[in-house]
Image (tube, rainbow, N blue to C red; front, side, top):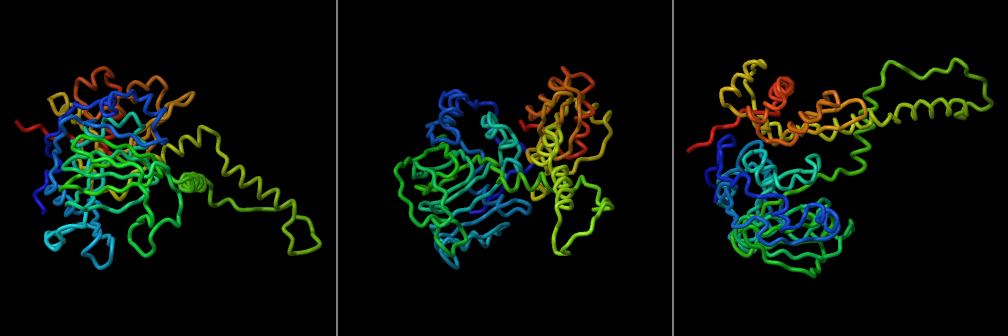
Length: 410
């Protein structure tokens, strides 16, 4: 089923600006959704994306799964070397030609990073902070295809993009490590007892909080697009902070005890030594709030090295050259794989660009808000900030977080 794919740098026909956050929530306010549903209970929104026409076809998705640098998977419930076999891309034409008529699915992650125009689909979900948004994943399955009944430990919006899919869920979340079938590549639930079921058509949207067991079965040839969210494990958060703190310690400084006293038993770790060691550790791993915020900002925006192929190889140019190009009509576009955020502190503003921290004055907040909010930067977007914005734009361009947008074809 492989077909030609859109170029990563060429426009694809997405209905730009057609969807708002309130619209995709079925007319519900963001505040109401966050209060009553977010991480609390599922929500089905019929025609959240009215008259939706997927700008990527199943054949094009299959083509994307054959590209180097794209994270793609194939799930074979039947027809593989074992039930629920999981295979990783990139795939070939031969891989698709050997597939059975039913009982399989393909999944492609980070599609909006490979095809930046698809950020228009992600945009209305940005009422959730950017640092929490993970990716737009696309899946295709023939009739009867699925990835099995399972549980995700993160929030997800499931947009039906093509054909029809039946979603069944258990309303109550589960967190049981022993609930899965042994010996499979995938974490498929051993027992699944749905109490709700819906058939979704193109444009319908289903929100599921973390831990809700669910199973989606293709009723026709179908594509489902998943907007998933980052949910770092507590161990990863604390581990990253501790690693950063360790990196800040001078490795040449060693333990000393010039005031050592004689002790009765050589096997004892004495009270004086314990007090000194305890003080050393506590002082090293207990940063003040400002330092901890900086560490967290750097880690949460750290560049994902697995997505290295989705960053542009920008032509080097100085700031004046870049400015001349934009003033002549070129447009800068944010690279979807880039992670950009800011933290407001009492005496400064921390602006994070793919893990790099730039310290700015509190009065620079309007400029930073523009850099974080907008996806495109032309003279109209830049002009209100005067000359002050150009050094940051140039730095982001040199870092590969901005690229020149392709001109739209007539």
